[in-house]
Image (cartoon, rainbow, N blue to C red; front, side):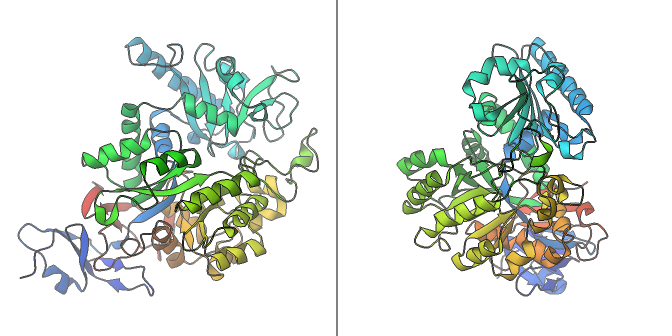
Length: 549
């Protein structure tokens, strides 16, 4: 006699997102797996006395979304610190930070634990100056208004640029590389900004980039207990948006042990693939952890992923490495026509890292935004035996040339991209300012897919939200690069699963696959606004981890 199902979703529009995409009326789940998909009558035969049967009322059921590029603890930080994504101007950002400063001061007075000379940090995350009329970075002059005694940091949304107050400069400037600390007269402290009224030539403006931001990350790294709180908050945010799995990019963080702590305690509500930073490579080799260890048939929700590295920076910080100068370089009186960004990891160092990690059997994933950086990563991967079999990845792939797209297809390298970045690609937007007409040659999803490149979607948490990404990918600023709804959904499901070696158990609704599912109130194929579709239920490994009231 066939055992009863644990969960049945019926009266639904179940899309398998396989090839071809098939539509069914119901799906049954038992012991964390899909055990039947088909007509409601046939599937409901598996319902027993203890089976939970959910009448979906015609709602759409899809494979759960897998976000192939996240920084989940940063989502948690935005939720518990100042969320600067809500700011519409420098003044509003400063006010949000002042409100956070008052909370930190209250915590200090009640005896809560603080750091750095017994004064708690005032932190804000997610500001985007490109949306402000006064389009400039936050500076020391702005943040000194927040506090003259506590360290204050405002992280830009891309986490490649931050603004700090004088307290931070006094305490940490000596630890920061000179190339990461901008000074008055650099002409790089904003979009046409002048570094603030209080700055004199050669003095730090409070704007820091790349390596200097790393110093701030290390100085503000949460404890194990604090990290657990951040992850709990972030996973609640993610599952409410239909996310069932993440590929988390981890650097110098307690997150890996916290993920495993929560998994062991039964509190982890997501599948987590940990992509460790390159400075963890030797430690991983020593303890014998390799790509794909954990998770899967071994049980548990945490898996070892790739070795992660940078090559360049970001368009927002003018540090993405280009072959031609930035379009707005001429707007800076101190910029040269040769301004093409900077290497965060030099090509020769990248080649050494790729060779060492690949030889040890690790998947690699490299951040590359500018066309020069993308070429450098593909060059490094080309020196390995079989980059396609290793499923080496390039993260972002924002300004890829025709030749680079051909090389992706020929080599089998995965393009791990973030469609929510398209919010900056409209006329008059950030990419228009930085790249000019090249903005329409960014994020070439149609060209990549048509060339046969494996395409995985993620968010980079800017913001985390698969339906936003699907919406933007299907309405690209360059119509020639738009995807169909089915193609975009597959990139956030089966494509991301492939990037994590999980295509045999995740990414489609099929018998034998893990029961990672999302129930949507509306059909993405019919909704007026895909980004505004509400998530009704999220299921991970057969367990309901989110259900809207």
